[in-house]
Length: 168
Image 1 (tube, rainbow, N blue to C red):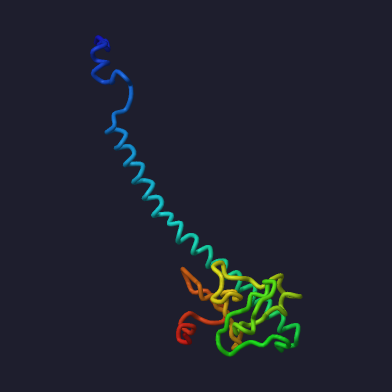
Image 2 (image 1 turned 90 degrees about the vertical axis):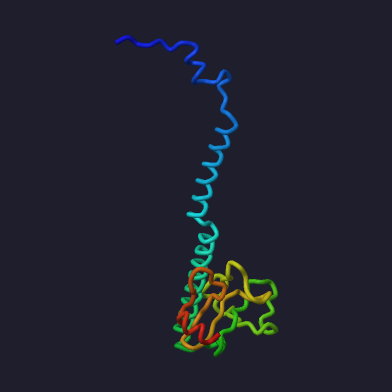
């Protein structure tokens, strides 16, 4: 069997003289890449990922506060000593500020914990409801802590979401 020679006329039939892509070919490739980029962005959903990360931070903060409160209570023989906890959910004061105004905003001062039990009072990633607030709420009955700014799931210690919603 004889091989057919690839002549110049055949080469011109399959390849353009300049060797460049046509505008239609470029537009098709750009459209396909755009569709893939959109699909990947929707699958990853960065907004949801950031919200989940903020909720994990809130959960860690509440756990840290809870551990500090329990350690404080154990050290003081089961008594709250210098800490006065409210019977209703009240926002915790951000005592990390230079001159926090806890009493005027009806915020709970947990600065007693910062001496021996915790480095600083944690603050919600998106801030609190008040200028001096942490975004975390506490009440006395068996120490219930809630992060009211939760985004993807309920974040609380010592209370369930349904119990919290009944109070609200």
